[in-house]
Every structure is written in structure tokens, then in C-alpha cells.
Image (tube, rainbow, N blue to C red; front, side):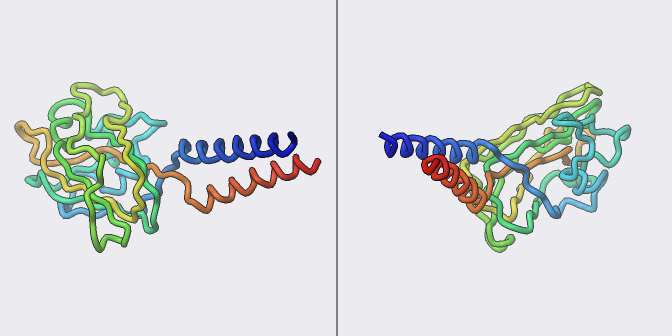
Length: 212
């Protein structure tokens, strides 16, 4: 009976640890970002991943009143590539994305059509990221209020050192020859080593309780 109880406790702990690891996504550190759509008309790509303009998950409107909180391509450039470099491999499971929003034509300059690819060899080869969107939502129009993510994206986990956006279009309209966005946050699940460490702690706890 004690053995069965211990086995049940072990199974419960193991399942709980695995479930907890799978559900607790963590932020991915973007080390750098590059593009062939610059030099920028406004801002720097750094401002799209350093938390500038964010309070919690709310981002300030993207306009001249909030400089250095968003990025736009050079004038006349609507399409091109944006590549995010993580410096090491992460097990990616999704990302939060804040498109341009605000008053006037600003939301029309947000990224619309896109294909998203990933690399796990420091950008030497890329593959299509299955489950990623082919279009982003348009940012809120005619508002000065801060906004949450325009897109919350989830996909089956992939190991990646780089993610590349192939920008195909913005939302069009007069005076919107620039394309840009506010912020992006990639999410990953913990490394296998961390999972095993947690599992080891769980096993040790079960064995200790069995001896007692």
C-alpha cells in the first residue's frame, strides 16, 4: 500500500511539474534586430523590443508625442525584412505584438501582410514558422489611449536563434509610405535542463517523504 501511495505521489508530482513547465512561458531576450527597410524614418528597432512605451502590457500611442517608443521604415519603403536575433536557441511558443496605433494615418502604417520564418543556426537557413499569422491586426484608430497587444500569437514550439518577418504590406492609404510597429515580445518554454532540475527536486521530495 505504501509503495502504491508513493507511486501515485510520484506520478502526481511528475505530471504537475511537466504541466507547470509547459504552462509557464517565459520572455525571450532579443539581443539585436536588423532590417533592410532603413535607415528609419522614425525611431530605432531597439525601441521595439526594449519595453519603451510599455506599462505592463499597455503601449502608449505611436506618434510624435511619444518619440523613441516605436519604429517606422524609411519614407517610400513599405516592404522588406526585419530579423530578430536571440544570440542563443530558445524553445519558442509565441509572441505578443503591438502594431502602430493612434490618430491620423499612423495606424495605416502598421504591418499588415507578413510571412514569418525562423532559424536555429544563427540565420544561416530559415524555415516557415507554422502557425504564425499571415496578417497582423490593425492598430486602434483615432485614439490617444494606451493599448494592449494587437496580436497575441501562439504556435507549436520550435527551437530558434532568429526570427525573420518578411513584410509584404501595410494598411495603405494616403501618406502611408512608411511601415512600422510598436513592440514585440517573444515567449518560450523553459529549457529541458530546467525541467529536469525541477523533476529531480520532485523525485527527491517524494523519496524523502517515503523514508520518513
